[in-house]
Length: 76
Image 1 (tube, rainbow, N blue to C red):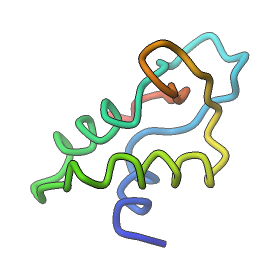
Image 2 (tube, one colour; image 1 turned 135 degrees about the horizontal axis):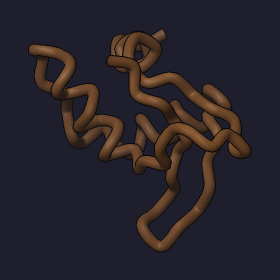
Image 3 (cartoon, helix red, strand yellow; image 1 turned 180 degrees about the vertical axis):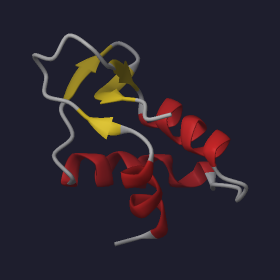
Image 4 (tube, rainbow, N blue to C red; image 1 turned 90 degrees about the vertical axis):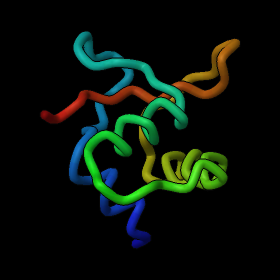
């Protein structure tokens, strides 16, 4: 498991598509959110790779005009 995957498992939590709560976010928005939670700089050039990782982790997703959105709830 990559460090980025480990960081992902610490903060946002996946939801199913029918859940009312939560937020639909792009992989870039998720990466920016994770950036606020850590002191380390996350490489922006890894956004496409991170999107593939989210798909591999079976995070509920849907396509939109903004790209692929992932359904998550933020853990504070």
